[in-house]
Length: 167
Image 1 (tube, rainbow, N blue to C red):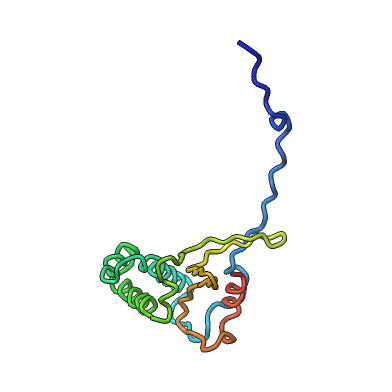
Image 2: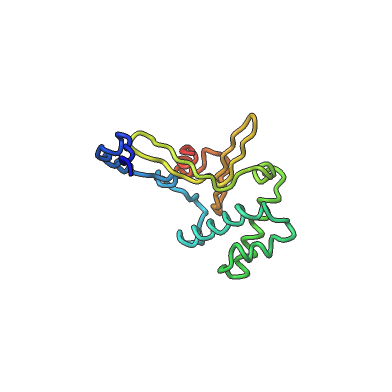
């Protein structure tokens, strides 16, 4: 038997103190209103649930043949009542079928992309709904499911503008 192998010096020092935990914010945590006048009829929790369901359809359906969307929607939203699922699918279909939006749902685009950045003492973490990267363009898309759509950017709620600015 010989001498035990000598360990590198790093193993004979105490471990460094753990890094301090930074406060983490989401772009949606930046305050400000997110609804427009006319966004009525759903309470906030139901509106969030509706938005989450539409987001799921917009995330997954681009990878499915259009003829199979109704069956896919059943699997994507299994706990959603049939009439509501049909309504949500109709809304998602309008978006996915819009020729002006075809590029953001094309093969090679990315869905649900996590991004994190340290901003001074705060860490910002968010999820970009769709990300399109070409040789000349980077386009970050964040879906909004507000019932009312503003005619101009200046009419967007401050909270939505803050969130988009963070991305």
